Length: 183
Image 1 (cartoon, rainbow, N blue to C red):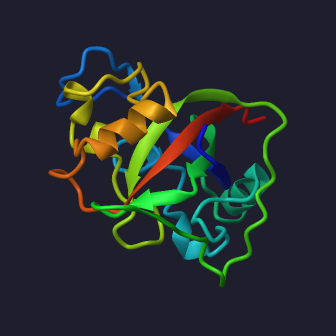
Image 2 (tube, rainbow, N blue to C red):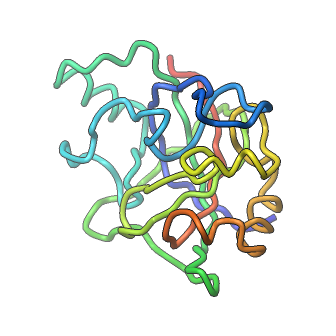
């Protein structure tokens, strides 16, 4: 399997499959991007994220929520790992966390792999779009009930075959999406 990097956590309000997404196999959206299933807050303005633009631990999000009266009820907690390379449309190249933000992700003791997402990083910082949901690619590509690929290989092959070229601009990164007990 590809070398994956621990990039952090995000609490999200998971959305049921939107009516506009013509993908009968999809029940809900576990995408990394916040386009369909929104993040718990507009979190960047608090400047407590790590160099991958996620959180090193769930407690950091809990503290942001407490300090800013943000409701976490109804959110699901996700832990992400990302492939160490990103695809720029022509080739795979390495990337690194933003060095001005400390990055020290504490992996969860228990987690459930839910699938793999392909995410755009046009700005090179925070996640852009997840074309499987945002651009309805799940209509034509095989995904699971959470609108994710079942394996890393399926995600990588879809990128190599050009399935993502006509949607959002890259580069593209492959993420493993894990659900984690929030409490």
